[in-house]
Amino acid sequence: MASSSEVNADNDAVQDAQRIRHLSQYIPLNKAALKGDRESARRIFDSNPNAIAAGIMEGLSTALHIAVGTGKNIDFVRNLIDLKPVEALELTNDSNSTSLTVAAMVGNLEVARLLVERNPNLPYIRDNNEVVPLHRAVQYGHKNLVSFLLGVTRNEIEPTYPSPYADESGLMLQLLLVFPSIWRTCPTTPLKEITQLTVPKFVCRYAAGFQLQEETI
Image 1 (cartoon, helix red, strand yellow):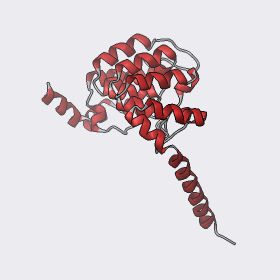
Image 2 (cartoon, rainbow, N blue to C red):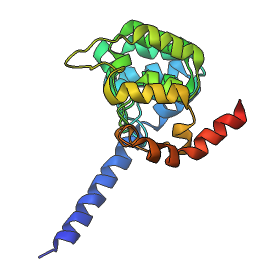
Image 3 (cartoon, rainbow, N blue to C red):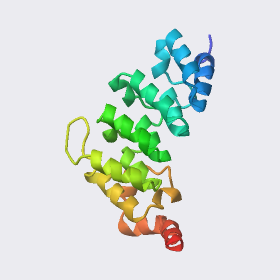
């Protein structure tokens, strides 16, 4: 009888093979999204409608995630947005990032406008670090995008999407605005870990970031 470790190894091998097969079938779509090739993407979607919402690369990014991240072809992105049902725009990758989160990170203001116009819920969806697109725009210093997202991210408490300006989320936003180097110092630190630090521990941990900001003023 096989040991539990052997069974787990076999299961992992099967899952890896399935993942490779899944991603391999979407290599042409991945290339089309990177290039902004509308015709190639259209042919793929015509033959496989499920491809529009599929995770097509490591990290489970969809074609829309990839196209938004490149920022190359706004018409290609607009076409993808129009093809997707409204709720499908809320699809996330394995970092729980929507396409709007990606737009906020790369500073793609035009795409951000298109996405929010189509689905006003997008500014409230949090990624794995429990932050919304507004936090990411502040983090990466995209001032125009910050201004836009401030205008569409309301301070309303709702059961589904709590206010990004309250509790730890609001505190983190203030910290990022004052000390934007926090996440450059330690970008993978969970939000709650930062906001629950005492003042002395906070200053000690992020002293290097404060020095960096002084040098750039």
